[in-house]
Length: 153
Image (cartoon, rainbow, N blue to C red; front, side, top):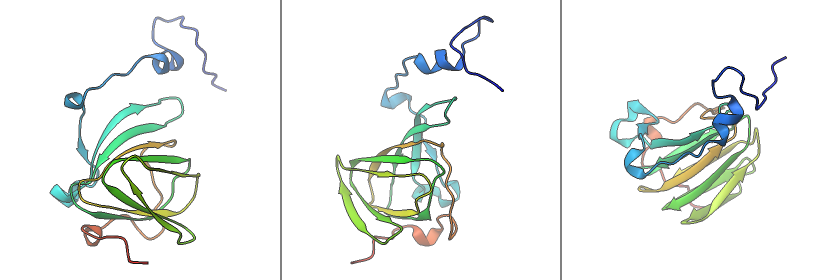
């Protein structure tokens, strides 16, 4: 059994020491990457702000250059997303849907099916407790999800 300790006997930073470090990033230093490279310009772009090597949690920004539907999916651990700019519509497994605007947020427990629609220009800050992973019961996003708005209720 491996135990994480905060004792440093080899001169190499332990996981707890790495977590205790301050992480500072200005926007100019962020490395933006296409989340779905095969979508070209239409792909959402993400920039990882912090990765926790012990728990696997990832904190990242996402920019949606065009409107997009993110189809039904779930995560093994919780998700927390804040809408920093723009509008994102959230729908849970029961079909309950609500619109989240600038400064709003949503939390999703582990293994909960949900889907979202982001308007063009939306920027979100998300924390995925299990890293950048998702299970897609109906398959991942396709080109047909580009430009898709939330259905009218």
